[in-house]
Length: 168
Image 1 (cartoon, one colour):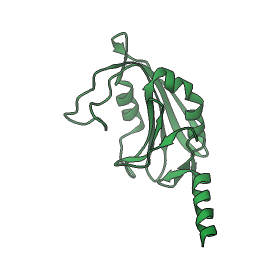
Image 2: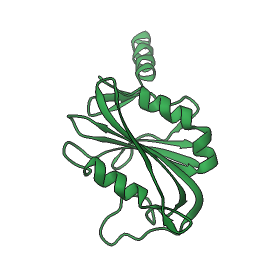
Image 3: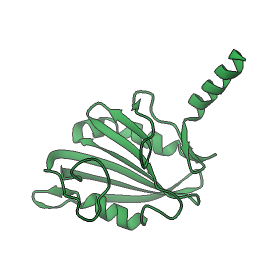
């Protein structure tokens, strides 16, 4: 019986985490905080955070609406920040990525923007790497946000996380 449990635990570690029929593997240096409300996974990476959001099939807004909202949380020299957006296919899934940096004024308190929610005081020299995975079971949203130096140092790890995404 013990051997069977060990095999199952090792299989879970090998195949990573999953939601809505999609699996990924986080970098082993990232600290998992597990799932929480609306979060399929949360990872701390020094003084930054990478969150995997899943809201359900047909929920969470369009790819374009999310990219516009996320990039609007950044400014450069008092002007809206220019986000770099790219599209690619990862193991048969359409993925849109975004890279934006500047002064970050995310939502006050944790969570998503909504009616009546205020922006937080801007944090200078921040960066966000994001990816939206278009999945028939519901889109999956990844946001890696934190001080630019930390996010930049972990760019390759984020790219590996996105490259690991595949259908179960």
